[in-house]
Length: 209
Image 1 (tube, rainbow, N blue to C red):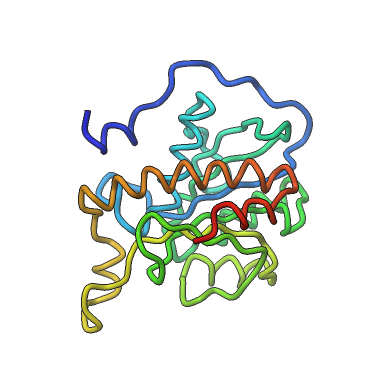
Image 2: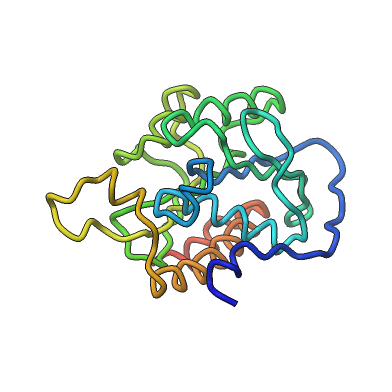
């Protein structure tokens, strides 16, 4: 089985249905469409797919301009989201879901790519600026807040300063880096479980590179 097949593989077991209102939104950022699958900019989608596999579900319900799945994580009702708005308009999906469930921004966890970190590394933060990331910029602009917890997934820096940034983030991982990303996605899922359980400090101490 190739590394791509491992990311596509979905557990056949049925996940327990969560009860009560949604307490957390967990959104992985990326671009929809097979042509963007396993590109650096889709690291957030890769984490969401890994979490879905872990929980025995599929992210396929159309809602809030996204593909969604209701899941139980650390005993909390959570909504997994993969926005279908394309990266630069990610905030549209996030604000729709936030407003519907009347959630504070601190209960929205965003997972996204970071070119300043090497592939396979994570950086968890309680809040922060957009750092030049257009998806995060959209979320901050439309919510008016930057105090949402986030997990940055390292995808590697450009091979040369003059290399076009858009071309770089839309390029696919090589085999070696993709294997590193598979491990990183598992660690990101572990981090999400801790963060939803109110243990963000533990997640940062354990997984921040």
